[in-house]
Length: 171
Image 1 (tube, rainbow, N blue to C red):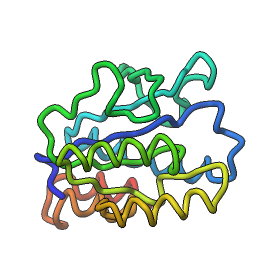
Image 2: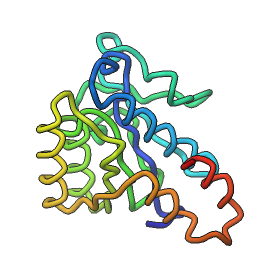
Image 3: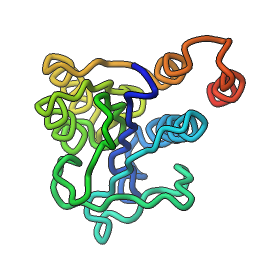
């Protein structure tokens, strides 16, 4: 994983999913990834599935001036205006692992993109759906990882000027 090759894709962390048991874990992890992306100058892509029905992206993600890409297709790759900006690696997190995350990951893999699936920043209403999707996506070629592993891999070591800022996100 290399910051100059990577894009961060945050899928559908919206108000309608707040009641999910996994929600706070997923929102916290995605928030850390977004904060890390800002520190490392990695432009994120944030999507919203049918926001009129599922609500907006949750404020915990602190999107600021960044707007979410609205979609009706489950796969983010089919959303109007979707582009990785030349990246050939995608760091992917969001909801739901077995639907929108899975279809997005499978489409990215089919398009030749190396996918890092951030398991602790993904979730589904049912834990069994989440676990099955993680296994399926790994078998399809996605590389499972964690929020902390992503952030530290992107900086490469304690000598990086961003080390203290990234370390502060983990604590």
